Image (cartoon, rainbow, N blue to C red):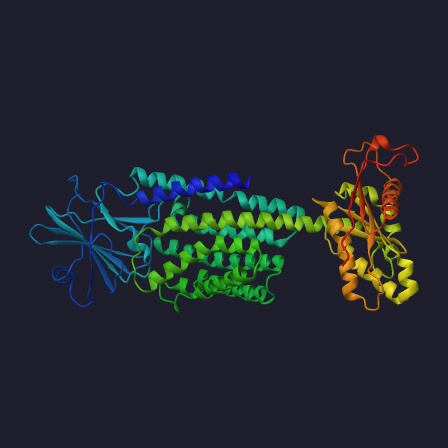
Amino acid sequence: MVRLFLCIAAALAVLTGSAAMAAPQGKNSVAACWTSLPPAPALAEALASAKWSCRRRISHLTGERIAVRFPPATETGAPIRHFRAGLGSFDRITLVGEDADGTLLTSAHSFDSVQPLSGQPLFALPFPQPAEAAAFYAVIERPRTGHILHAIGATANPPGSERGERLAVTALALLLGMLLVPPLLDVAVFRVLRRGVFLQHALVTLCVAGLLFVWSGLVFEIVDLSMAGWYRLLMVMLGLCGVSACLFKRSFALASRTNRRVPVALAAGAIYAAVMTALFAAGALDTLLPTGTFGYTLLPVLLLLGTVMGIEFRKGTGTARMQVAGWAPLLLFFAVQMIADLFSYRLPADGLVFLGMGVFIETVMSTIAISLLFLAIRRERDVAQARAQVMGNLAERDHLTGLLNRRAIDTRFTGLRSCGYDTLALIDIDHFKAINDVSGHSVGDQVLEITARVLASDPDNIAVRMGGEEFLLLLRGEDAAARAEKLRRMLSVRVAREVDGLEQIVTASMGLLVLPSDAHEPLSFSSAYSRADLLLYQAKREGRNRTVTAVWRLLDQRQDGYGELPEQDGTAPAAAA
């Protein structure tokens, strides 16, 4: 399913990118010349004395007034009718139509009076039409965001009628539809595991989808907004993205246990972003902040998220680093946009393309990371439930080693087998009586405690002290036999390293039985234990310090549970430590 999601995401990303790249171009538009006008002279005088730059891309524009000049017709000879620009904040736009005799016809439009196009991150205004047009001009006073300059142009036909523009709208709608799938999965997972990190992931996915929905102009398909209303809604969505991102990263950090200070800092960042967004939405900041500058108040949140990603990349797990890979393009996009707006740089392409790519990458990578986290949490829950079944009360614990005793395992054996525990190993310390007689019972107790710690060190097994120096292991998962043998060999090394006063090397013998997975009737613990005990006896008889392994064969079992031993595989004794 993950591969399918990646393939669909990649295809839609390419479609979105190609469509959005193609949208502003075409034979219906014309190239432009740029300049910065001084604020003092009259408009006619300023345009007459302006020094124009007609390079295809203008990277840096400064000044209170940005002027753009267009020819009177397209390459095909169609007369220019409409001015087009990206959605953004400004004070006023003055459109000028210059007649062949030098007469100027003007029309002025304030920020509040401009109506955005439906389904596109653009707005369009009609040029004044002189009798014989020589040139057209657009003078933008105090543009506060670079978005307004990205898609600026002049066209003969109304904007939105080009095939590439319609394709871009369709691709973005498909993209947004896909972004609704991960939240639905998150809610379904939350109902099972009851972990808040999955709801936080659903929230952040919906917020970035909402940001893309507003930024792209698709919001105008269902809501009639002015430019000022659109900008306020965009900034509120940006603030909500900051809040949800901090909450999600905090929940993910708590689940991943990466750093103790990170969740505290992210909680503070979420509170700050929530307060600033609420004040802006209520209009309380309108008199304190210049129009179009609210986005800069979220810069501390951007820096915080970037710092957290650096910590996760350096110290985090593979899942946390996958989160970094998903969030990095989106945060880089916002950082570049803020820098471009702050220093009046005109970016070479429409930012909507890169926002869509960033949202896709973040959603895909975060969904994969949250899926891996789900598998890890479910595995921990399964292990915890299995252990909880055998940890009912203190009476089922061995007082010396802290391991479970036979009473705990006897009544729950069938349930543990249904949880995947299909390998039973019986381990006995060799010559343990000699250890007590020569080194003392305190040393013998130390050997038992170290043995218990070694056997319980594997999270996918259950260790039991059956009595005296005999221990039992229930294992599940891949390579269970190899893991049990590794633990048996580790006993000699750990005991020799941690116990002083031993006169001999401590070894252990083991009988390991692989239980049937297709038994038609429940297998009793006494039957399995009896078979493993026979294997342990054989290991002792063959010289100790070794493992005898067998696979249970139901046809070989008589009614009393004994009968001939299954096919056996003896393991050579471990080398002396």
